[in-house]
Image (cartoon, rainbow, N blue to C red):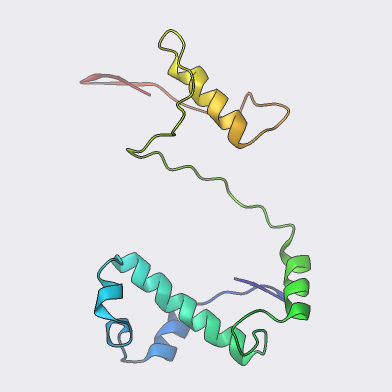
Length: 139
C-alpha cells in the first residue's frame, strides 16, 4: 500500500498475528459475507490490518481519512510507480460495439484499445497469437 515513506507491505504473518484465532466470519454480518468469495474475504482481512496500521501510525484521522500531510508525502513517494494495464474480457460487451468491417475483429479490437489507451505508436498496443488445435485455429 502507498505510504508517506513509500510502498508498505502487509504480510500474511502480520494479518495472522492481528486476527489471531478470530475468523472474519465472526466479525462481519453473514448477509455481507454471502456475496464474498474466499479471495475477497482474504482481501478484506488484509485491508483491515492495513487500516489499523495506518491508524496506529497516525496517518488517518478520526474519520479514517488520510491526513493531508501524509497524503501529500505518499503521492510524492509513489507517483512514479508504473501501474500495469489489465483488461478482462468476459461475456459482457460494450454498449456500442466497435464497427466490425468484413468480419475483421482484429481491427475492431485495435480501435477499441486505441480509444482506451491513446498513445502515439499503437502498433504494439494489442498483441495476439494464433494456435492450431484439434478443433481448429484459436486466437
